[in-house]
Length: 110
Image 1 (cartoon, helix red, strand yellow):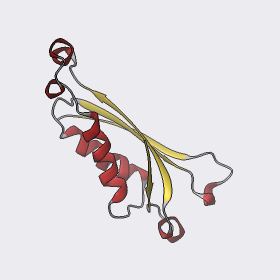
Image 2: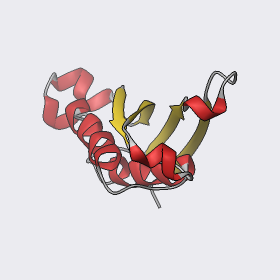
Image 3: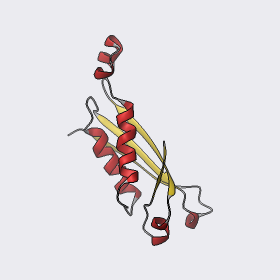
Image 4: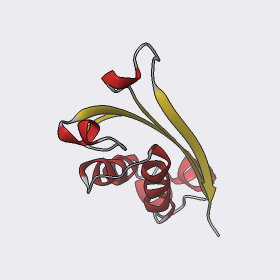
């Protein structure tokens, strides 16, 4: 998923929207949905996207780690989600020639 946001340590990173790429892997028991073919028995992926969008559209954060953690917390609140892996990457002009800065975290339901 790709979103625009104003996050970063430097003022220049928050001055204008920049591109953030977000990958989310969800772990859940999919057997009930496989038998029933009902959305209520699985993870609603549109809600996963909404969770990421709300964080990236939200108040500026300094660190990618913070963004990934906030997304993971929201996704873990969704029904059926047992664990989530979140990767957040960006490529601000100030980092060239590096392709991107990224973090990858995994969180599980307590």
